[in-house]
Image (cartoon, rainbow, N blue to C red):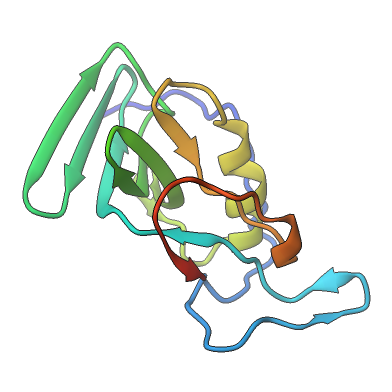
Length: 146
């Protein structure tokens, strides 16, 4: 399958640990935070596979949906949570067949995902912050912080 040139750039020069759950609240040193913080939504976990003009959704419990004439990028696999009719994009797993695990997580979570904001109705982007006090309050059920 031939893919179009991407309309974004990812910083692959740095690698940091992927997002993980923590028992303790992260501490900052100076003005730079060591961790990104997010509110974990208590929904159904799934994957989005975005093609040139189609999005395929695969959710726990074997639910499947396909949306035509919409796209979040060609050849991109996202992790997501679904709460009712709201879908929240959490992370990017693959871009055109390449795993993103070795890429800078901060670049993906803070820069790339934020560029997709409000592209398609019903889709939201997980907000990642360096300080819990900057995290927006949501009316969606949550499991706490990650």
